[in-house]
Image (cartoon, rainbow, N blue to C red; front, side, top):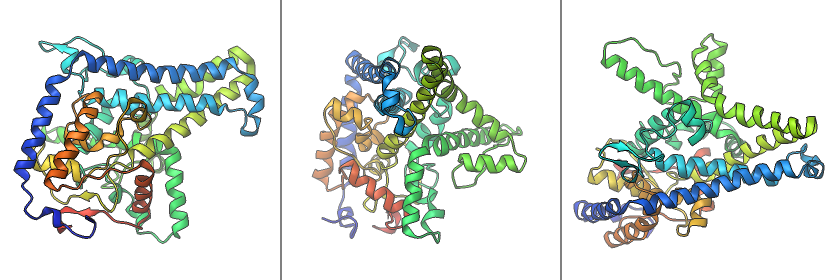
Length: 412
């Protein structure tokens, strides 16, 4: 059945019956979360740390590689790949699922936090950000943009990650297609710091502005860009016009990660092997950041895009039957199963189940996926699961305007 061409699956679909079976799966999964899930999370974190510190070991213990890789300025691609994999893992698996509260029940007792992996304390404040999850994004801002707006308004106009809307200038512009695809490639190289970090700041300050207005207080969001996302380009443009507030907040957001990766590590390199080593470490850190940008772009930006994926012109209530349905038809899964496969997909290959049940553990998604897929097949609900590479093609085509998404309210 080709769901792109017809909404036939919607005929005689019993939403309540389907949702009842889905809710039962959720209930069973949440009842099972315990220390085994925390042990599994610790295993994944250990893998990430082995990649990162292994990369540093390769970088510092093999200075002769600086000469071997002189054709790329002395950057060490082996170390860069290992470090980039760890940076991606800490975000997409550890920070992501902990900040959603996937381990809360196993990390608290009688309302008291008993472990590191509880969303109430994880990565909160500068010290915990450095020890728990240091990246370009500010965890508090990411919590607003991703955990709340994206997850509970998926595919709606209020979803800050709605690709079809965000890329409208490129989709409707006059550039030749080859240059449009070139912009997609360019964005993939820099997207975490260029788009994701400043846009999460925008959404955080926008929420604070709404809360201030409700309280009758004055507050202005320095990241005002209307319905389009805030980026480093919009922040810089604002600074040229005399608006330095957004620039200052962006610098504070970037500082912990940037200073460690691009100042502290090269300084250590200088202490170990002088100027040549420092240069090699700096270039390796930059290469690692580029690789992790591309890696995360491929496994994240592809999740809710394609001509077989729905977007929505109306709102729905969280945890409603319709909310669960939108999680399925507004998302795409990649190949699932096995910790190694799931690790390199950043556990983002369970996007359908993740949007249905955002607050369960990584291990729970492995249990949920075959059950949810079977329920969808039983009721005729389209369940999109393809190779991440096929979904990457879908993403690029939507970004440049070659394809368009399905619209639920249109009857697609």
